[in-house]
Length: 501
Ligand SMILES: C[S@@+](CC[C@H](N)C(=O)[O-])C[C@H]1O[C@@H](n2cnc3c(N)ncnc32)[C@H](O)[C@@H]1O
Image (cartoon, rainbow, N blue to C red; front, side, top):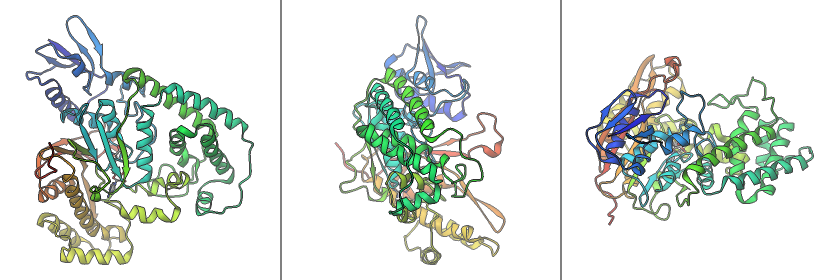
């Protein structure tokens, strides 16, 4: 008899559901009995396997109780005893809008039987949550994303898993010395588009400090600069003239932080390296072979990724997506990942982008009218229904929703087609998809994105294997307005697929 004991944070119902599925898949055991404290299993279990599970803190048998790997990882990143830690290991290197809950990613990987020797694809990998969890489990995770900041951050996270924390501490000491050596300088006159752009968003004094940090990182730790630059990039918006709490770019009205930028960075580095050290005590150093690649999900063939993959998992962009690029402009430009004039066109390339010029709207309206991309009937009918519901009082953004949705559905369908070519026949593809809504002529219209994506995937050869609701409620007692809208875990199976051995 074995008792698997819950962590001491409050669970969403879906987490218990995922926990059960994980136990079935990883331990292959039936006859699970749920108790107040966790799951009681009728037999002894293979501890090494049980240690892979996500939602349990301890494994207890008659004579022995041990803490799980997950509990040890989360322990080092706890923010209050009753909260689930989501920034454990290297996940806290850099914030990213729409970031996966790493526990869900890990649970799904376990349910799919991912481990050493398996190859996993995350076609919209963002900041690399899936890739990190693959590395923890000893699997090869490859990701693609069109946002160069996402690729930069994801690869920096993966790299950290293979650098001893003590090496980074040495770098940090050198960096601190270098900061002391740098005398305050004045800004040279702006020469490049980058200079002009940064000057528009930082006070001169602030920008001097921030640019000095960049120089100091490149000279004090050139071989691991990406780690420290990523940590600095994560603080940029707080020290800029942009309102850091706004998804849109607006001038801030709140004061800048009191702590000087260099000091805040040193503190952030120390906290991150401490967590990494705790992680390495549990997992050791990882020889990470996975990586994030800059590329478009619709174009995975050719040289981009090296399939076939045994599974895919992702959280795709939303139907009317978060402005990923927009809110990360400062980082993209400061890190030299994108020229200021490249920001708009880059945003426009992303699936789910709201970026659209007036004349494009007309072209898209014609496409919708003619069904130029040959969308299946239900999605076409839905977009047309929304177009008919647009009223004179709806502004430009709302008027654009039907055509943007048409473009989103068409591009996601192309993405499904492309992923299918990289995945083994019969292999699973999990997507965590949010529900959306819009308001047209004053009436709320729900957009059941998971259902539409399932139908679009089916139209290009995938089979729907499972649709698992991830209902959320305010876990920590916030008012319901702050609660994330429900999401769905959609599991597809590749009906065509790449022929694999
Ligand atoms: C919901 S986010 C993924 C977040 C990720 N799971 C994480 O934990 O950070 C969706 C991602 O899709 C990317 N994206 C949008 N269109 C894309 C495309 N055509 N090809 C590849 N990536 C794309 C965006 O840049 C964004 O990073």
